[in-house]
Image 1 (cartoon, rainbow, N blue to C red):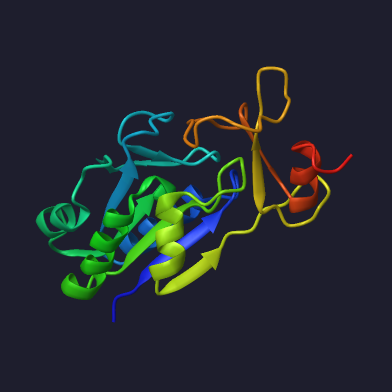
Image 2: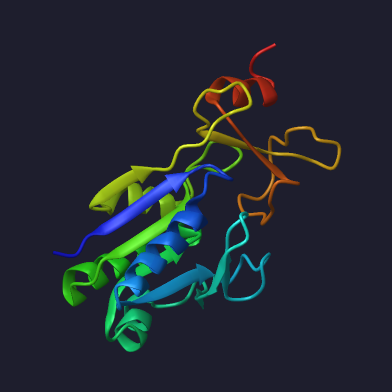
Length: 192
């Protein structure tokens, strides 16, 4: 029975690495996968899912107006699994489309993405996945203090934590740092 999975975490927890490993495991057993990633994030190159440890695979990109049910129905024939990176960029409608892939096409869908933004707010795609996914899996990473990192800050050019701005700004280690809630609160000026 197919299921909708949401693997979530902060930045630099290894979500893309896990996705690429899952795809490799399917292919190693002779099964095809359909890899999807947000067109918005092209840091590694357009249509590429890349890990910080140096592995990468080509993927089909999706935009905010992409009908993911139609895309999977049309391109996913013979696939054993759909693996989607940057799930935080999904719309609520697209999460429903992925649920239809699971329910109507009987195809498992594994989504990987951030849970919250730098302000501690849920992304729309993440909120919908937290509400509707069949299975939630936290990918753990650590704060500099050794506690579990559940939050992320966005830094300016001088390394200071930003408190406002657009929810979506693509960046990596130069822009974002994963922290535990206490150190996030400290960085945001809530603890003095």
